[in-house]
Length: 216
Image (cartoon, rainbow, N blue to C red):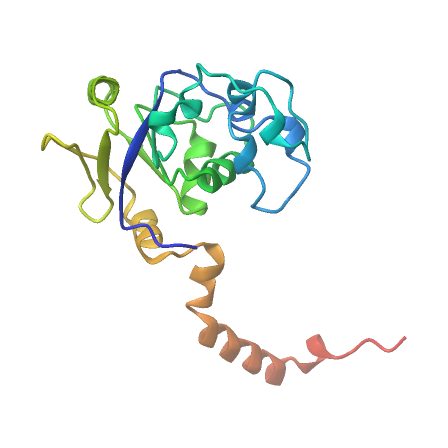
């Protein structure tokens, strides 16, 4: 998993509350268990004017010109700001997969659904909780300035705006450690690879019958 230290980039504003995981990545695209291939259909029902289906050539689909991600000023956005209870609904891990593959490693909101919040950390993303007033300020500044860019510093636990305003945010120390070092569950386990190997060797010696081949 790629380490997360400091993210700096253009902000895209999604001015909606209670965005559920089906809106983030619709159910018809969940047939794959791979972590790739979902970015093209992020917010599919909002981005396009027709109904999407797996394997479709999205370049030939009619886009919704009013949706924020289809507007030229937000084409290179890396940070998403949105409203309360983002990621509610079903517990599909495909939602952070789609956001991450599209290019968003940071989502800022006043609150998140618990399962989505946890899934973000497991997939190298940082969900930042700020107050409603702080989020509202980001929306206001983003609307006023094209190319509006902010910095999210995980080590310092700060969101920094172009005018010098700094917002502090909380993050669980263990989750922070994992993101800073790029550790997913497998990476954490591999830190103890020698300990695991030693245990297996001792177990083979003390209980060899566990490892004996079954004679057919």
